[in-house]
Length: 483
Image 1 (spheres, rainbow, N blue to C red):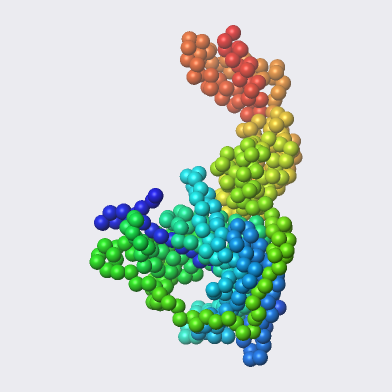
Image 2: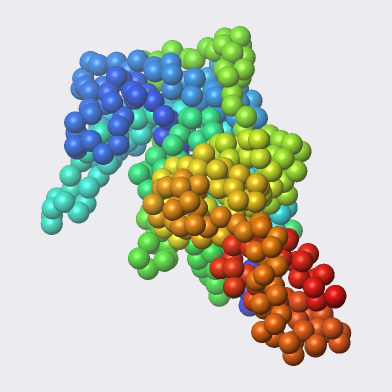
């Protein structure tokens, strides 16, 4: 268990997350308006979204299907009967004066997410519920010196609010939770997980307590839009609460914001224990009644999810737990690896994908979908290593050129004359020249300084510009040194 050290001893942090995930759908939850990101302000707004009098919401069946698919992916209970409620509050970007959401009877009940932690361990975090709701519009405070502008393009967009149990104890676990949830949603195709575009946002609940004590008073940090900020906000908020308690104060239950420039949480509004949202069933919408056979049909279409894929990669490809975890973290990475590994040594394929490729992508700030080296071309490079056309060292040089130009490995090898030397007589000639140039070191080696063998290998590889087959060099060199 990981604790924070305070002036009065150890403190435990208790963390729960509420993730708002925008449903991948061409239309909004209760209207036919488009949902495309980046459209001109107020260009994707219907009379329903703008709350014109006399217009009625009509449920988007595909959004319901996406919520059920997500619930199944979280191994959660699907509630065949669920109810839409009105959550009443006033804000300028909420035209109706209420949000259509779900409260007592959500569409998805309890589920779970298995976290893959950096130290190689895993642990399970409970999911309390998933409910469907419509998003509010967006207030723009930076368009005018004294006015706030309202963009209603997001108004009515379908959201899945996924609420965790307060099972996490460190910022690292919270980061792992968001990463894993985002990965599952992307595998399922129910949310794109683009936090920078606002299609996935977190409300972070943090409290502290002495180990073994009851839960402390929690504070909620609203609308955190990156995994890094989630982790930083937890670290700051936990220490803030500990300092207040140790100084004799008490924590007020409140909603706070994460300041991304000062890296502190700031008070937004106080929050009473009982929310005065005056929930009641929406009179314009009938309860959702799902057919069990329909739910089963959706279940049959689920893709192989990260945990199952990880198990298969370990069993079928004999990969380490760590490598398999890295490769399945995003569906695009797993698909790329499988294309490279098909018909080849999977361990060699894994090493090149997780090592060379991911290293170059990270340095270039690119995602795997933007890789200049296709899976087919990386496979071609590995084939050249496997058939001894080039050595592993030369392959790294070839890969660098592939990443810069997008060319095929075989073309680069031919153009630059990088074919590996496997001609025994040519290798012998290079070895003889190196031994003749270093008679003193030959004598030292023969007198027992075995470590000099690496020196001779290096000299031979240098003489052949790295093109000599390393295994042949080692074999012939050893014979000549001992002879």
